[in-house]
Image (cartoon, rainbow, N blue to C red):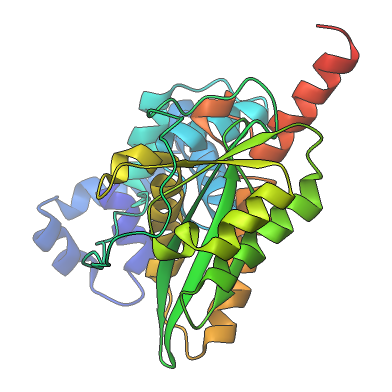
Length: 292
């Protein structure tokens, strides 16, 4: 790799100077130039380029495990360790975490429902268990608040809304999208925290009207709604943290692209057997039609 670096930059810097800095002998470099690449080196270069392309296709967010799965989808026979090594040598790394904003303090909620999930985040069919939560996105115009509704069966975002204020209407707009898109025919358990948006009379009335059964986290316990928290961490780590938004509309457009063009149709999930939420639901639908 040192020799390759020297070859790539010899138009900018002197060869002997780079050899001295990298602690290699210049005669070794010139000898390396005359020798053709070994088969293994050629294979390393070929698969490194595939890794670069797979990472670019993911929006530069996949780590070595999901990159491995992408290459295997292309017919490559390759291990996670090899992908990790090649990615490391090429300077490819997954995005790092995102610091949470300090929690907000609110008064006693108007209406509280029983915690029906008890941190059991698995559903046996679509539209059986939904979770919802609200997060924030910083822009030069001020905060943009995002509410999402996620189906626990496939981890698909079935509804979302983004507004400049964190109100009950924000949550209702996200839930309205979910109900309109999914049109559930059976009762759905909808889990949330005890925020004022989810304990208001308007929220409770909407749930009753559309056959949704409320469930709520224990007060101040983020682990009771871990799937929604995990989605927000992904969104911020993979997209928002890497951007500065001049306006709320620019942030909203980016959220749309992440959810509708990447997360739902493309992003692989270990919970789904390395399928995207959309692909996981399609596979389950085919299995049901086949009577499996």
